[in-house]
Length: 485
Image (tube, rainbow, N blue to C red; front, top):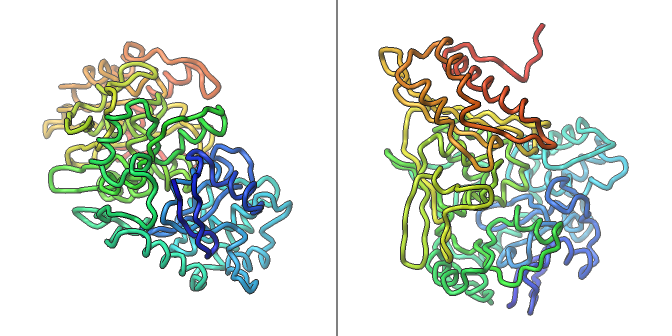
């Protein structure tokens, strides 16, 4: 197969590419572009951050878990390409110098490229954009000041030129910018068509139909969406993935459709698009997604991947289960749907048949009584110890008419608190009812003790989160990030 993309303004064509070669390894070993650093090699530290531009805009991505076929028809900028060919610095580079935003310098290239991507998008939420870049010596204050100082300066022409290459290689059509609120009722995506020198259709299908045919023919193939999980199979577990299918070309699976009655999320919708789509509907869900990994990971990770990998600490399934989500699966020309909670059978086991893949997930439009609480050792970019999602409907007479409560981190799968829900149903929505329901948690969950939390902590905090939800829904919300005497 041949992969074609732009690197720092020049077209690159790679014939006979090994599909699971990471961009980081290729840059450093084949191109000698060593400004992109290898730190954690799992997408956490941000030292390997590069900017990738396509018709959806400019994104900061982790090169260490980005495979070369994912770059087809796109533009890549490394720190060596942040400045112009004549040496003129990018505004964020100049600002970092002026505000003393670097000491040892190991992390600096990653910070530069995260800031370049944000600057290109006109984004000013610097704390969020830089949460995926770790610095051990400078401290974030001068780095954030540099980002603020660069606000309002125009994107340099050598940076904006990257979009021209991306547009020439990718089908015409409009896609919502990642930094903007999504239009209603639909977030459109471009229609697939042949790319210049496309990779093998069997390796990188261009539609859900192509994927369905390829996966039925090769049901043992590894599906790669954003590679934020599968990438670690290669970089950390050193697994040899002999047969892979990349899903990034399936633009029809990136569709997010919002109607008066339903929200439907295509499996390939990434977490940043998901966040902006659900923000007007369920703000607590969107805020949890903001804390989901980092900007770089959210720009690659997909809702379908977060569900299909079946992690007991995946952050989106509990929230979707609380919203009464349906999962839509496809195998060849056959489709089926099931409640999302029924997809998870046991640890590492899901109700997915050979050759079957997640096509979409949907949930009904509803009043916003959803609250999602993520507990982790770090506020930003950390795996949940416990994640609770609560969705309780209170009737006009003050009694609980409906309750859906789901947790991650409390069992081998994302799981509903059915005994707690039953204790609430039909009862007055009161502190006494909440206290009675709290006593039921031990019937629903027997959590484990691990490096993130003890079993006792998990049960105690699950009970506390129900109380917190009650306070949030009765105008007695606690500001848990504020310190008060």
